[in-house]
Amino acid sequence: MKEIIIVIAQFLLSISLLVVLHEMGHFLMAKLFKTKVEKFYLFFNPKFSLFKKQIGETEYGIGWLPLGGYVKIAGMIDESMDKEFLNTEPKPWEFRSKPAWQRLLIMLGGIMVNLILAVIIYIMIAWTWGDKKIPLDSLHDGLWIPHPVLQDIGFRTGDRIIALDGKSVKYLDDLIGAPNVPLITASQATVVRGSDTLDINIPKDLPKRLIENKQKTGLINLRYPFVVGKVMPDSPNKEAGLQKGDRIVAVDGKPVKYMDQVMDYLHNHKGNDITITINRNGQNIDKKVHVNDQGKLGVQLASLPLDELEKEGFLRIEYNRYGFFDGIGKGLHRAWNTLSSYIDQLKMIFNPSTGAYKGVGGFMSIAKIFPKTWNWLAFWEITAFLSIMLAVLNLLPIPALDGGHAMFTLYEMITGRKPGEKFLEKAQIVGFVILLTLLILANGADIVRLFGK
Image (cartoon, rainbow, N blue to C red):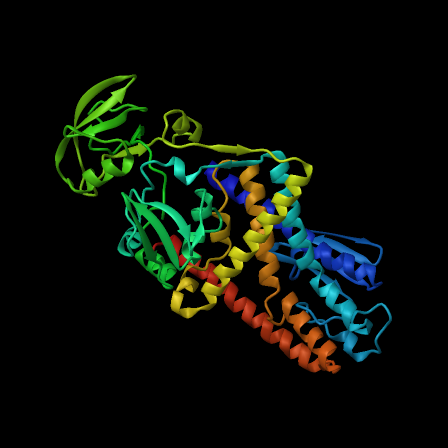
């Protein structure tokens, strides 16, 4: 329960920050061009508000429906569908009376703030935490490939991935950097397997296969030892004498170094009794254990810190610290990479042949990105990613989104013809229906996945 509360708290804090600053972008642009802002709200407030206060010409408040936020700009057709102003002559302080270029900047204000915020966060991360990366060449025995779909397309445990689409990859994050997964958006991977160098073609429908497979293992993992964290109450081996910290070093007399070797052996000996050799405080001890029908011992695995794995020679960690100017460059570079990677993922979602749309989720999926323990580095990294995601999604040319308003304004600037108010009103309704449908489908998919249907 505590973990759920921590995840929800991080999610709400991040989303609230992003929404307020996004709407602040619209607000500041409107004020810059002397446009009246009637309301500024965090969350939506149909029927009633949790809090509201009138300051000057603007009502500031907090709604009860946490689906975003809004600013209500005088003389603009928006999600409030307030059309009374259409019956009056345009006022100088109204949105509709402003030149097209000013209206365009007002509509893009939120997107610009989101992009700037992401850059600032990435710069702050570079200054405060620097980099902590695992070079792929330090993984002498390659990577663990637990997912059957990746195995089906040609990957094998022990492979050393050295390039994606012909571009060299140096660090583990270059393959599976969260929340982006560059491996999925690539079309080809180059791997070293033993003394051979191979090219593996990555099918366009990889996301579809991953979703349909429903395997809960990771795509690619580090190879690390099998260490007992806890013996579960319903374990068939609760009387076997296993203890927290026991490390399996052999199965039926066969030496094993990595967890994947142990798990493969267990999978091939479901329902059987086997002898494992554990190392406890430097001493090897043989234990007879039973493998259940799922190929498991009934133990919870220990999570080994990366610095401990480094001390034992399983990997190497590179630490980089950044000065003032280097940090700015690093932040800009990381923001650009995140933006381009997210656009690639969005292209896959809009391409039906990839099946990536089946993996789209709503608020639950976003919340699950956050760690189960409070971690400020992870919080800011995820918030920066979500800020870029919010900017890109708002730029989509859908009426009711900033991108839709910008599209109509650009049409006016190019053709010299302003779309009629009635047309904009109907377009807003259509856009709102589209957004509501997408919202229901995305969050409905979360609910279906939650109950495993």
